[in-house]
Image 1: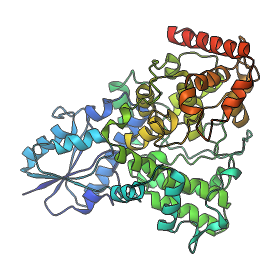
Image 2 (image 1 turned 90 degrees about the horizontal axis):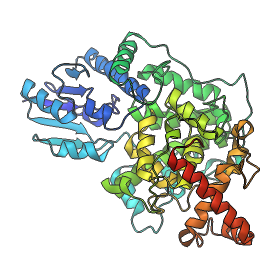
Image 3 (image 1 turned 45 degrees about the horizontal axis):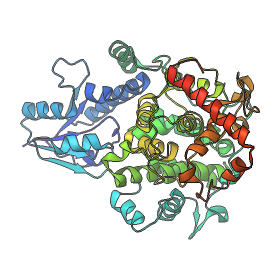
Image 4 (image 1 turned 180 degrees about the vertical axis):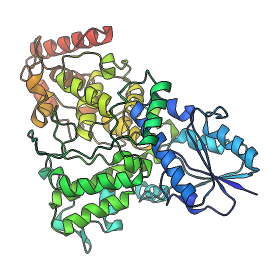
Amino acid sequence: MARLILILGDQLSRDVAALRAVQPGDVIVMAEVMAEASYVRHHPQKIAFLFAAMRKFAGQLRAEGLTVAYTTLDDPDNGQSIPSELLRRAAQHGATRVIATEPGEWRLIRALADLPLPVTQLPDDRFLASHAEFQDWAKDRKELRMEWFYRDMRRKTGLLMEGDQPAGGQWNFDHDNRKPARADLLRQAPPRFDPDPVTTEVLDLVAARFPDNFGRLRPFAYATDRAGALQVLDHFIAHSLDDFGPTQDAMLQDDPFLHHSVLSPYLNAGLLSPREVCDAAAKAYAAGQVRLNSAEGFIRQIIGWREFMRGIYFLEGPEYTSRNALNHHRNLPPLYWGAPTAMNCLSHAVAQTRDHAYAHHIQRLMVTGNFALLAGIDPHQVHEWYLEVYIDAYEWVEAPNVIGMSQFADGGVVGSKPYVSSGNYINKMSDYCKGCAYKVADKTGDKACPFNLLYWDFLARHRDRFATNPRIGRIYGTWDRMDPDRQSLIREQAAAFLARLDAGDPV
């Protein structure tokens, strides 16, 4: 009897486990379904990227002689969910079993487990650390810290290793990688790809079916196949990696990409593998083409943070996204959807997200995430926003980054301290403050940067939790040395700002 081989939109790799299991007579099932396109209101560029990449990947498989049952979103027979499409194709082809690669989100893992057909979910071995390996690493540890996991992954992979020691004699070059950036007209942006007929057809479909989703659909410039993704990788290695390290935390309002690779959409959809991307960076370092701190910083993002976040997501379980350790319940304000704000950093970060479905990690962590945490916004609403607006967002990687690292809603599972800062950090790492209606140097008053007011208000609200934290507890000494009247003024002005935010008034 025929078997169904399920390939999801983020499993577009010829080496994915389910495809390695294909036998003669098997039918590969791929489907554009409304359930996946709308469980959150995804950025239209993300939907277009995945649908176009899926269609091209299905064409590649057919060219190899494999049987592919592909359902487009507007197919009148489309059941509009993965389970319903599997059941429809099983009846159509007389299939009695489903082979799948484990999905990256708990809701789909459960949906497949509940299917009234036998389903084998194979491990997703595109990742470098299996669930069992991460669980063994985490067992009996009092704290789960990425740095220690990352070092073990370096040892396992041999990346940037000299025998049993790290290249350059140290594991981490963060101290070299925290410099601001300057505008540079010669800086090369990632390659742009003109939509081909397949992509154009998808863009028209998405425009018609998702007209109200946040984000601009056009111009659309992402690659939608492996060949294009490899071009982006090669361009990054040749033109941007060497300068990536020093300025990876920098932000410029007129340069959304700086030296960043913008490879995460292709990695997370399966068009590139983490190992080949890291090997390319390591090879460039070995050839003397890029500096060590840049190669190390880039590789750490992939075999460190990316693998660590996946490990946390599956270790902590399906209820992780509902955690709210700081008891934050403020609604996400309209400025996250593009409503006008006088805060230049937030205005630019949101506008860039609207236009490109992309912002780099510091814009996400220290601008949009920092503000949400300082303002006490409901972490589940923040989580859903990030899942909706970014082209590379999938719950396995997005949730630990937001619930854990950005919002501290997991109580410290991911990070040992909350990532909060006043406006000073943003001013140091960007040019946002120069064009802002607020004054980053003002700590109180009508023109005071809201990050300054909210920073101290946040620390005061959560003193019981953080005063003894070894990484930020000493900051309370600065607060305690302030005149009580100044403390009261800060708290009052922070409360007034938050009241305007709650009322929907312009901030």
